[in-house]
Length: 223
Image (cartoon, rainbow, N blue to C red; front, top):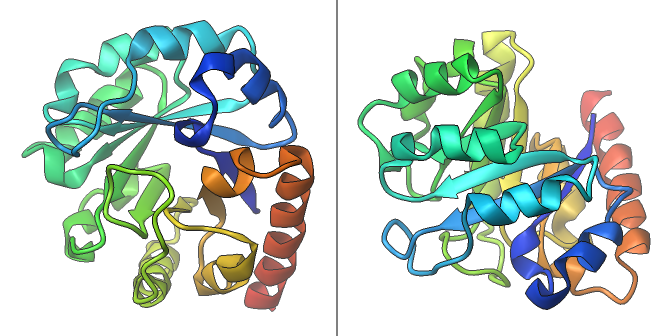
């Protein structure tokens, strides 16, 4: 099933309430939390997530692009996150973090950077609900999709299928209508897009275009 996840990073931060109203037809809201250490940028914390929670029924996937994510799990859970996704590169105890997220009653996701080996996920698969593959080097919005990531998406989809577990495969970075079909055909089913959606003249229309293209490609890939 294709899921569209607009990334708040590309929204107008002076008009966040109005911005998320424009994407009500999406499936998820992708919330990039950056600390200026793990990635070279700063964004927002639990208070913004909490403030938005009462204005949206979307699934909130809070993407922790931060060092020491274990220190903030409870804060983002209390703020209204439905999924907490952290980077395998940011902690030495990924399995423990996944268990803690599950213990908070949330779904657990893990993210990997473009150069990170997929082997790091091998023993986490039984516990995961979502894997987020970065198709750009994280830290800034508006970057171009790294083409070689298509091969990595295919490899990751094969790993998930072999594990015989229902795990969403999300791709984040440089997605747009021009490359969306190839990304889905490679195996992604959660499409994270910031500039392509929030930067469009009509975000609702763009979401429909993403969904239609994605579902067509998904059915083609499954047939």
